[in-house]
Image 1 (cartoon, rainbow, N blue to C red):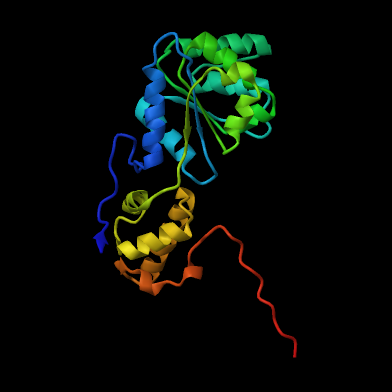
Image 2: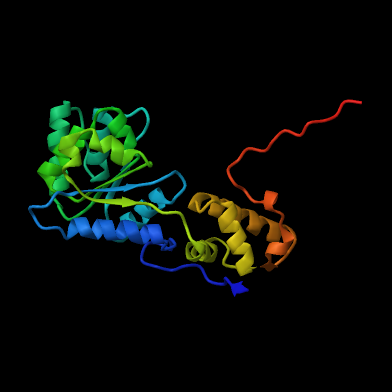
Length: 254
């Protein structure tokens, strides 16, 4: 039985330092510490729910990085405007070429400050990767591209961008230590048995997002019953959230 009585405290605003967070921070520091002749793009990819955006927020809080999350409807202009605004400037009315130059200039004001681009798959799908290369090459900022499992394959299709990737880091599923860290953060008032956390990890498929959903379910269960301790024996396998939609129960008509 492990007592989870204090939330995780750290320099990143209280976010739990999961192993994927550590992987991403190592990638950030590798790019920041690279020699001048080396490329400046890093790629962090993996399935949905593995905590990639969580890792990006952690790094943003810790390093002061700029971060943009690409939307489905974004155009080149919207992408460039978002970078400029994230850097604290007003883009105003300008052509794509002018906005590109402005983005390069505002990023170059602090070339050690990373630029994190989340949902970078959408840039690849929209044929905007060359714009990413131009911005990084001329500003020389450390640039982190975050995306789903197929992001590396999409980057390989654009050789001039692919050749400028310094490091490829895949996100990994959470392990039991990550599960404990998330429980510390989201259920600090509960004592959760080791066997319960192991079951929760297995039923969550190692996905950080599902682990958090299940921890919230545990928290509500304990609150409703005024409990401070929970063990695995109290929960059936079908109680845990797995991401699968519930099946409709068939009824026999008499």
